[in-house]
Image (cartoon, rainbow, N blue to C red; front, side, top):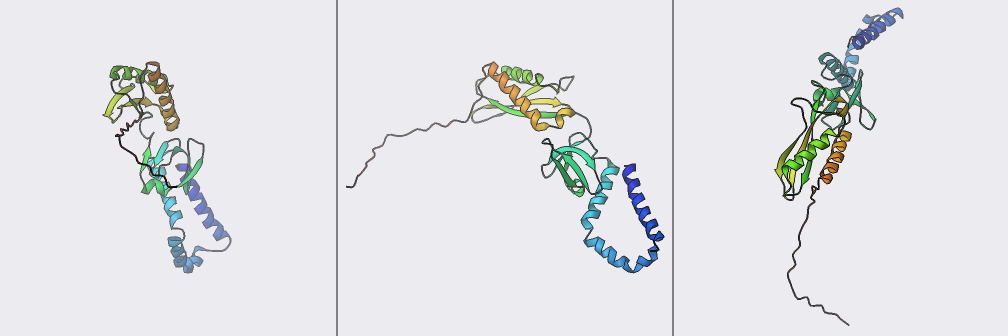
Length: 228
């Protein structure tokens, strides 16, 4: 924060000193002040908006370098740089996206690492009716513990919740706590848990159902006429 503000002040002070050294006093620009103000109000409105938003971000510290954020537009990634006009976010595909600072002020921002460095992840899955719930819970917890980075301490332990009774399956959620390393790559983390879940369910002979439809046909006479 001090580095950014100091650089801004140095640029402003240097510009004033340079103009005075060249013989252009600030009083000589009084005539153009109104025109310049009008130009700034229209032509540089977005730039000034992003600049002020960047200063607010630095002062409030709601977003810091290294945080994992999700914007209202759906963009998810890690904050790697906060600049004068934009913030650079790196996605899990290592794509650098430059986001205007005003988007962080005017829109909704989910900061996954703002407070505590851990978060709860829910992985939905379903099993066939008639399957033992305890066996499903055993398989889910075993799958969670087999994935590196799963937190298993005190009240933050893996669990399996029965959340719904669907049309063709009992719907569960594998609930796990993950650390900051896994938060930076949520899609990859979810894939690891799904992979482990399928392995553990198959090892216990638990069926993963899929939608099925039965088609009943009534007997009927079909007359076919052929013209020669």
